[in-house]
Length: 441
Image 1 (tube, one colour):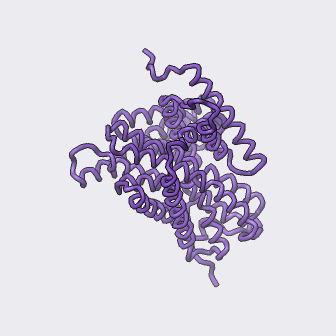
Image 2 (cartoon, helix red, strand yellow):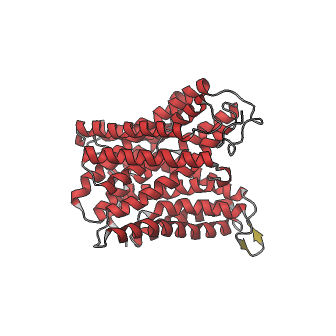
Image 3 (spheres, helix red, strand yellow):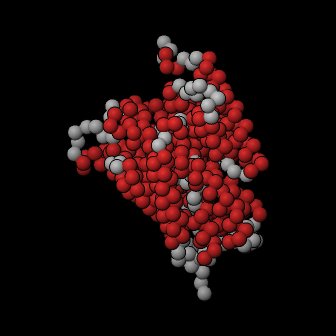
């Protein structure tokens, strides 16, 4: 039996087609001619289509937008997990992925409590959504800088390794806080913290680890395209399972863990073996990650950012909410930049290099788009109408964070790289694992 909510009218289908084609076209045009990330173009396209007045009612089916966000969340985090390289993480990378995000999360939470009168746990869940950087923006620019020899190899490698792992902190913090914020049971605070803290994190990591073991095994006995399809199916099944057991917040960590565990297994054959097939070859796993990345760029990225933008109705947005949301985002970015600069103190980096790292740590995009609707969805499911306005404000503020931080971060990387970094020999550059300690005098 077909769910009636999944049946599209011809108008719905037309709106979806227009959204996809225009998001794809505008995104790539802006990236090619202006140099800004294509995902920002897709986001702007959705906002324009919703508010331009050409369409009488540019609404998309709720089931469709929910499906797009669920698939995008699981698939993009799966790719992030596959691309993680824990072996390159040093003490400076750990400081960079931990302190700026946590400080930004708590500072924006305080601002949300002050300006929106939002409960602490819910405001902190919004803070962790806003705190995640976008590897989809940072990593391509760092690869380009490394090819040009700008900053040697240590600065790009530092930012790439930290960006890949930064999402772990943000997603873990979000999972804990949103669970506590929307806990409708009569459990006391200590029990609620335990269930939505260690239990939720452990459950997400466990489900993801099982999926990672399965993916690592299948990758060795299947063709690349078959492994890719199976990986996508496993990620969606994990998402559905987390929703079934009412641990919606665990699904993001599960997808991230799945990719990371599969990657680790393929690099360490003693961890896992299937028959006579050892998982020593990581090329197949990287092919899976690359294939999913292609699907993300061609199909899901235009739809995800387009649908997020299409939910941004300017007629329903008050000017004071716009100013308050902007104040929250800008205050968080200011705290983030300052903390990132001080987090690199005591390292071998110079003043100019530390300044570049701080400003390059600004861009936000993918995690905000994938997670921003989860609080509102969980609020609607938990039947808490008094919190719906806060859920809408989280979506609104998350969209603002992408609109503000993505262009600022890209401009900072492009403009400051030549001013603050020196061109160095790629082979003689400092190792990214060795920059956590100061140079000897």
